[in-house]
Image 1 (cartoon, rainbow over the protein chains, first blue to last red):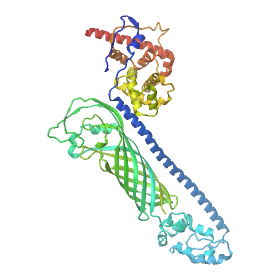
Image 2 (cartoon, rainbow over the protein chains, first blue to last red):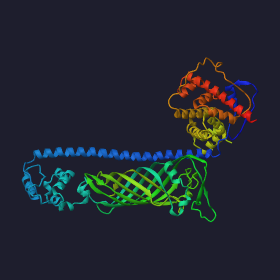
Image 3 (tube, chains in turn brown, blue):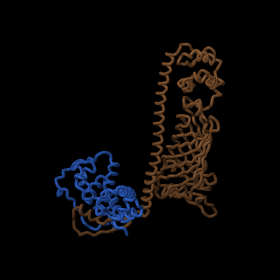
Image 4 (cartoon, one colour):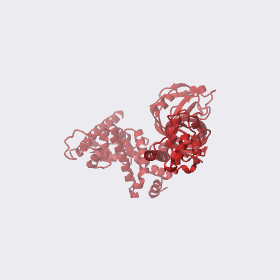
Length: 429
Length: 184
């Protein structure tokens, strides 16, 4: 103990409880001087963690809203499809039995149906599969007074378009249709292409750090450093929120620029005793963090035992490419390749392992670059809710391209994360 | 110098200056608790850190500011008990010895001078459950009923553990004294 105390009691025998009690009376040993700093840092981490929970909560709410919206949309769609089918069946059963397979036959029907309240849409073109009608021309060609509102709605309904697509099967007339008609549920006059879209999203990722020695400085790093980092460091969560602006270049390709904020956490646990390095200073140059080459190792060093969480906050400007490729129904595959300029912030109080001595070391902002470059690739599925809105999920992987420590530090470390992101996009019309 | 009311009010508001003042005022005293309940100084420091974080978290629940020190002691003891329960597997069972009353259980030692470091060394050599019961009963004045509830054991087990702890501690203390006498 630091404060040695000696107590003299009366020279007689006494009950051990009383003796013990008296020995510890006013026993106030001093804890290590640095303990308050540890408590202070632990309180900081706790506060950050509670703040971090809000980010997770926001990401969770976004995922929940996205999921619920998708489910509701599916239910709504199925109900609509069911109702349309019932209506069509009813119409077919009530309509004249004569069926036609091309626009000229359709005109005959319109003439015939002057006295009939219901027009019949041709569904299958078995008699002449090579001839594919142009849907827009057909609609325009129809006498307006003979097209009932129900007919017009039916003509433009998704099911009808899908049937035509099946029938036409890679026909030339479909390629002349507006791109948006293939996935829009809105009337044709609303199908003005909006090239700009806004996207908001959130990621829930797992994160970690990669380490390597810079080639010129390999002998500046303790021989056991990488093993220790590998065994002691655990990946923790990374949450990220982002807003972005997309510009659609073609039907399938867009470019994107945005603003994102992420907090990446890692945890270190170390409990070991190791050799101390012997360094040469004279005539040698230090790396950017002030460390010198190690020429040998001396016996056993002090015991190193600590736990720490490091949080790197990253404010980034991502930009790059996003694709939209039709997959099935209203689902689109959405690959994404982005590069980003990231402004790096290191949490106060974070501890790490000194790569020269293998002792605990505080991380300070000065050891890190302010800006690091990063890259992100993602692949996902997007559901078009209507012409303007879409929701989607992507699996993403991202990593820093440039190292986090200042240039010419012997050690290069880069953060990485993989996980799931959810987004909502809204096309500006 | 902040008084207890100011310190408590500051700690409730998560004011770091008040938290540090509380640590500076009671840190050494609570470290005494922690050392008695731990296997090593390093464990005691871990316990002290966790204890203060717990205190800062729950200080709003302290009703009577005049009871601050007693309340903090209880927080630290509870934390030590909780760590002990986590480290020990299942309830504590010992063979019940025939303990009739306290007078049968009386274990006496010579009340010669002894360095506190040596006392602590002896205490740390005790098995953890012995040390727990001895600390709780002899120094922190908990009843066997409270100890039994805290440790998830029976009252007779608690009494039995206490008796064994006293006997073993006496032996250790006497060994230490003989060693010290030999040196002189």
